[in-house]
Length: 543
Image 1 (cartoon, rainbow, N blue to C red):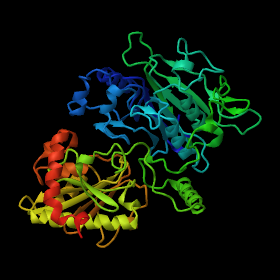
Image 2 (image 1 turned 180 degrees about the vertical axis):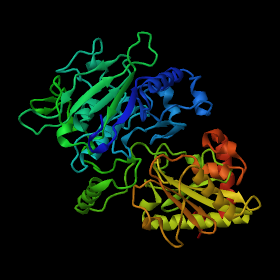
Image 3 (image 1 turned 30 degrees about the horizontal axis):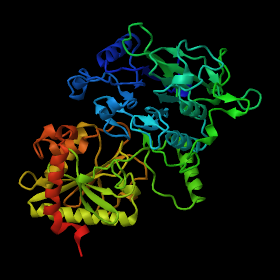
Image 4 (image 1 turned 90 degrees about the vertical axis):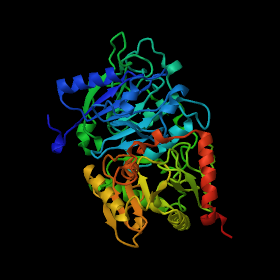
């Protein structure tokens, strides 16, 4: 049946713990698509990787095999698999397989909104890499509740079950949520009002009766929520681990259609006579930095009046406050210089507002990053004094590379990255001309069906793109700049792939940084060598 207004509902698959059995998972997905037609997304909760060596994963990581559908997964639930997730803010792990990140909101071009929280509950602050804390939940909750006219999210993904979810509903059998459930996830589910909430880890299939999100006769009717726990992929008991459903984003639904109540709806398990349970109002940080949660938005174009009015509401809210601090990271940031996560042995120069570091897994020993010392996600959001220092570092690097007979190429990808990273790569002058480099970027973009636009001379990025808009730009040693506004998917290694291609550096095997990593000792030696060579040009060492 056609959706109101002619909008096509999205067809989605959700999976429980894959635990490394990717052949079985994707085989079932392919069978489902042969039988019922194509699906738009596969969402995976629980443990995507097994604790032991995943022999199947190598085939997907190397490209010998490809996931048959765009797949989004949650992060580690144990220490053994933390290393599988190199970027805590989310990243592409293999073609068609994307790690969403520690926590956040995925907003598709269709308007579908998916909130996600990786890991298991921890009382520690900050939480270990495979866990979440009350602060994580407070940040995610507050970021959404501060959105004007917030009604709820379409989908919530958590590996942990919410504690007490069975209250007023059907029994989950042997699963005791008082022992294995998370009170913080209960708070999140009660606050975000997901239409569908998926969890894993407990190795059973359990579909709770739908529950309402309003008090009857006391509040206006709201949509219902459905909690579904999924079993492990390929389990011997043949419990259901793949769930198919169709959903029209609530942002495009008629209100009367959205709030329809099914006959078997129950009371809300997370709400009692006195309001929300599990200490929802006592979460630390719930009132702090209300707009600092990052949103991963696949569509940068405004979607009609709704997106426009939200932007206006944010501006009005911010106008009533003192000047905002830069957005805070959603979790421990690998690039904030004060962070314990930063790899300080790679740092080669420290200025007043920015610093220079060797790229991990660089294309060459002189591939460096220019980064702000404090947290900032893009050049567009960088303070003017920091922008000035970035320009000084760029100028110094140009002179340094020219002294070595090399050209300067810099690029930034403001997409699926938490902290601004301006990548600067030297290209030997006898290798190719600046025009060759420019042409290579344009050709590769066309092959990816992307448009690279030339930015007018002396125009700043801030004049072209709004803050928090995903984009990619590249700057050549002549000062020419090419720009692409990211609207949907974007190849995360695009800049490296172009420069590593046969047309430029002739090292396509080094396009992926993960295949270029050195040991910590080797990295330290390389950083020391760069420091010594760069010293005469280093702005941080000027008198």
